[in-house]
Amino acid sequence: MNRVGYAILILFCAVAVVYFLPFNPSNESTEARPESMGLLTPTYRAEGIKSRLYGTDGVLIHQVSASEMNHFTELGFMVFTQPEYDIFVADGTEYAINADSATLYEDNRVVLEDNIIIQSLNIDDFIRQINAQYLQMDMVSKDINSDALIELTGAEFSMLSNGLTGNLARKQFALIDHVKTEFIVNQP
Amino acid sequence: DDSDFEQPIRIDAKTTFADGVKKMTVLKDGVVIRQGSLQILADEVRVDAALGEGNEVFIALGKPARYSQTIQDGSLVEAKANEIRYTVVDKKIQLVGSAQLKQNTSEVNGQTIIFDMQNEQFTALGGSAEQGRVSAVFQTKKSTAKAIDSDNSNKVEDKP
Picture (cartoon, rainbow over the protein chains, first blue to last red):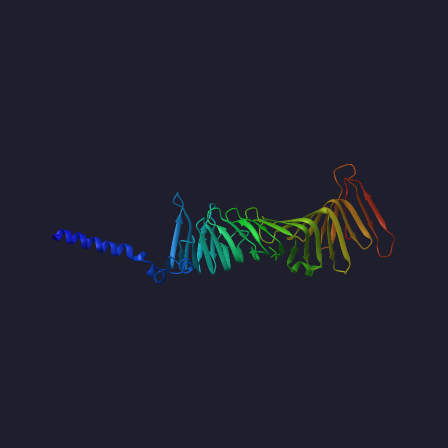
């Protein structure tokens, strides 16, 4: 057999070793991560991130910064730590949203948790701030809802309830299981 | 009495809806407004804040809506009407529709009664319709009741 033959034989053996080795049953149990460990391990992690989303018309829709972001591709969500969202709605209102953590799903739904503060940066808005410990938001429609304790505050009032549904863009909120509303009226 | 108006206005209700654009809050189902001794019971209350801070109007609707408050001399003033409008800026309530205002044995009825809670004065207006009469019965401490009955073009003003 000439040199070319030997070369082909050697090449064939190299390919066989590279290709078949991973399927060798004896190696399977040591290398493969337990299935659950794989899912719980983020596909990738980023720190000190800033992200902006523009509409097709080039207008800034929202921006988020976070101390850390973990992306779980197989599970289809990202988890932000200490997120700070800035939401811009059609009438020019801007909302600043802070929380201890946020989970963003592929359907544009974000679940905010712990020490949530939604603040309208429009100084003459009737509803200036929403405080909660748990709240879901649709990043596209700006619908929000929660079944936890919620406080809405304005210049002269505060409203407390065990849940809410509403929309930040339309600035309309229905308080579920209303607890109390208090007006502290400053005489003009 | 005067100290009532320095207190926060607290509202209890089953459901609440807040509209940030119209600056209007609607509270429904067993609504109770409290501010010191002032109390208003209603089926529905709308808080209109469109005129800005300090100019809120609380509109209580009921069958009827009911008001009560302890006034300066310690006696209780009570009122009822289909609609009670409490304007915070001038501390008045306007009773509209089958309105009645009572204090001790004095009573006034009419289509509309405006009660100035700070100066404890009221104005009762008859309605435009034929039966829009105003009737008022005052029980002065010494003398017997003094009845005033006027037709719809007149109005009655007095202190309860």
